[in-house]
Image 1: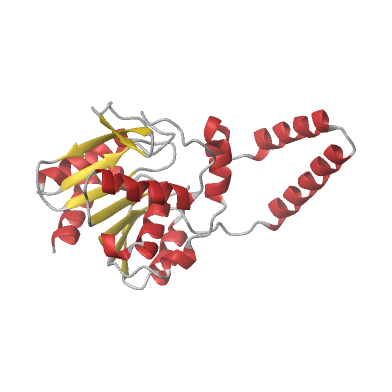
Image 2 (image 1 turned 30 degrees about the horizontal axis):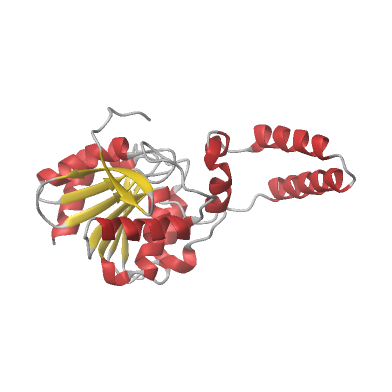
Length: 262
């Protein structure tokens, strides 16, 4: 999914030149966190309309996405969450509402659990963080692959081991994994983290919005988060996919305006 380029400004956060955009001149602050492979550009349609409703929305390009350079090493979700805290400090934001889509939802789960004093309310849009259902065939295939790969490396056939690794990743790697580039090691760390234990410790009121037809984070994952987060409600949009907040933008704006301001 593409979108028009949004003008950014830059600020330094822990040595990184972070691109971000701020929508609105005043109002309660909302921190909007985009999904994996996305950027401010896909947050802008939502943020600009929330600004018209009297909210002030801060939207960074997370490290490695948009116009912000990659992190200095392979980061996990906790590293990204700590970065977000430092971004808040750089903008002198003591407490905010959160909006997190997909990967941004992962960060929101950690922030809500570990830094409750800095969060008013949370909106999770088609959030990641729930482990996928196990596929016995895929698990067996992965175990076989790892055994052969490590066996080849163990007998000094590292070149052949790497060829096998490349073939396996091309055959069975997800689209996000294949396109991760310099963020591939980060992606592997991020995608394997089960965040349900964090979800269970969130105290902030939480709204889950989900596309009924989401194929990336299926609806059952939203239902699992609703059961796990103590104070959560789930809104499901028909004929909407993984970007439900864009597919149903007018309806989502009405819902978020009421939720954030009530």
